[in-house]
Length: 206
Image (cartoon, rainbow, N blue to C red; front, side, top):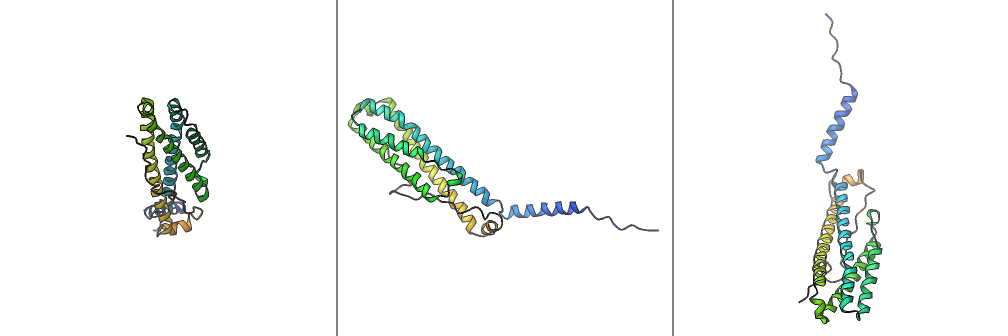
């Protein structure tokens, strides 16, 4: 009575099983952390831009409202309009997010708009009717809320960049970076350009 040798599994089955095992092992070792954290950085930056745009969108109505009560404050009004134009002209996409010079220009332009808005708001102290105008009060409230959202978005972006940069500089992320993600550089982050730049500006009035 003859016996046949056992049939070996198809080599393709072995390859598939090996790939599946490796995928499971790598997933547990954080191989996907770097691209995941990178996407979180991009998402956090999108929120920063979104909140700055929200502020920029408030400016035209704010200027027109102040102008209705304080037309003689033309220099201040013009400064706000020009600062807004400069701030909205600088856009940073995912590809240029690592350019420290462009980030610096973006931040400086936003700080100039912050300063111009502060001076515009100070004008209201000289015009009681403006301070009590319902449209102005609504815009003031929206601006306060937006400044707070900007501060939160900036903080979240800085945190996301820190997490990403730490991952690719420490083990095991450093290993995966050298093997699989060497084309992904360290990310640039915000640097405070003015005192207390990480805090929302005070734009409330008494």
